[in-house]
Amino acid sequence: MVLRVSIVLPTYNERGNIEPLLEQLLPLQQHYNLEILVVDDDSVDGTAELVRRLAHTEPRLRLIRRVGRSGLASAIKEGLLDATGDVAVVMDSDGQHEPASVRRAIDTLVQGDLDLVIGSRFHPEAEILGLSGRRERGSNWANASARFSLPRGYAGLSDYMSGFFALRLEAVLPLIRAVDVNGFKFLYELLAVSKGRLRTAEVPLSFQPRTYGSSKLDLAIFWDFLISILHSLSLRLLPRRAISFGLVGVSGVAVQLVVTQLLMLSGLGFEQALPFAVVAAASSNYLINNALTFRFQRLKGLALFRGLLKFLLVASLPVLANVGLASAFYSLVARDTLWAQLSGILVVFVWNYAASSRFVWNTP
Ligand code: GDD
Ligand code: MN
Image 1 (cartoon, rainbow, N blue to C red):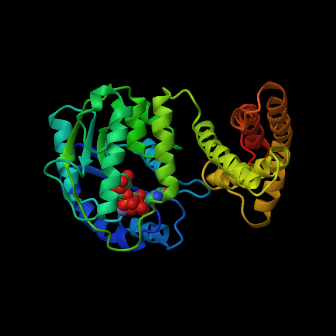
Image 2: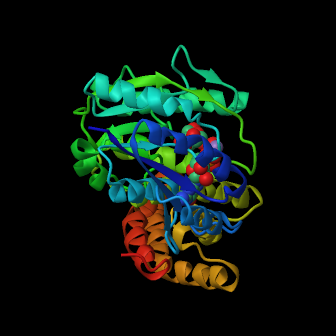
């Protein structure tokens, strides 16, 4: 029987890249019963319109167009859940992954009777033409952290962040369902939820430079990566957003301590400096949380300013507690400004996380 193969192509603004890629992928129907699913997140460059038009004369091509939902991991999950093949292959649609790797990955999967085959950029036989030196070093570092945080059985893999992989749908579907799409990379999350049970192998990739458009990797993705690693290390018990909120809180602690010191250096007493420092720390926390922790609910323009007022209001209860507690600690327990502040800050964290999620960014 001919193997049913579904290729999942996530796209965001890939109008210039998708057509040449499809032209290279469609001939695979000589070998497989082929289905190609393009999952587009409402690209602004006309990617979806182009794919739709191509699908008129190409029944093997399907378009999934998502509006109001976004993110690479969630696009991949949606494509995989809709795929009808025995085997699914996920790859980038910007031409950085070579279509030639598809057959090699599927052969390895089928012949080895495996669950998952990863296309690796860091395999000894791989070639990297399309990564800057900085990105390559970043990836090495990220891979080492990923290896450390994932089940031991996957320690032999070399590319935990790859956007290219083939899997056996029936076997892996329950895990695909369980993947948290707020995570950093789909593959990393899949490996994390599988608890080491997947039979895996890697094939080398030849990672090409992009022809059109630009990469969507940014600081926020790096942040997600950090959160994903900490989430895994907490045995996936601490909610991602709480981890993110907590890390931002740590930066706020630094802001508060520094501002207090500066104001005291300029002659203010501790109890006078403290309120300013607390407000500065809360405002900085608000802005960073808005850009990172709650970026999918990000507030802009006037709403950003209204949000700040709400955040300060929400935070003012514990801010008062913070100031009160820190002052009380300072005058009653010990004249130690550091511990006075830290004790105030701890009380604040729990309340702030719960209340601002709900009232400032309207999330449960
Ligand atoms: N649907 C959808 N939604 N697709 C997206 C989104 C999104 O929010 N963001 C990116 N994509 C698509 C792009 O159109 C492209 O086809 C693919 O996902 C990869 O995105 P790039 O922006 O080109 O990623 P990259 O080249 O910087 O990153 C490469 O390395 C990463 C690991 O370091 C890719 O190979 C990634 O897949 C890989 O995880
Ligand atoms: Mn790319």
